[in-house]
Length: 153
Image 1 (tube, rainbow, N blue to C red):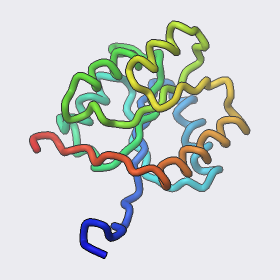
Image 2 (image 1 turned 90 degrees about the vertical axis):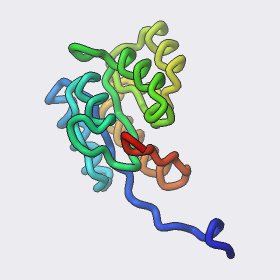
Image 3 (image 1 turned 180 degrees about the vertical axis):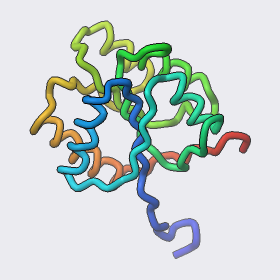
Image 4 (image 1 turned 120 degrees about the vertical axis):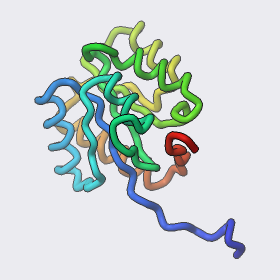
């Protein structure tokens, strides 16, 4: 086996939660805990704060992460955040799931136009949400995700 084909140890993915609502953020953390997912969680309250963080303007973003993004947030909503992220050459490959209360087909289509990995209704909280979190856990253990280059590299 050559060095390039050897399995490399996987660093746990960080979960970047972009969510303005404290109760929803607690519910996500509780679901992660119930599913025994101990990945680090960084919570940011809107798209402006998330972009600054991911670009290294307000902290050092992790090299491997998955985004859980709320749709309705102040300053910059989830769709605006995703559009801006996809325009950024350093961030465009990031894996993002949209979490929302909106079942509007226009919102769903707009999210997938911005290459979300999934659109998840918050009303499916409880057991359905726990199943989602378990699915995410399996997803990031199996799928090879791109390493996001730190800002300036």
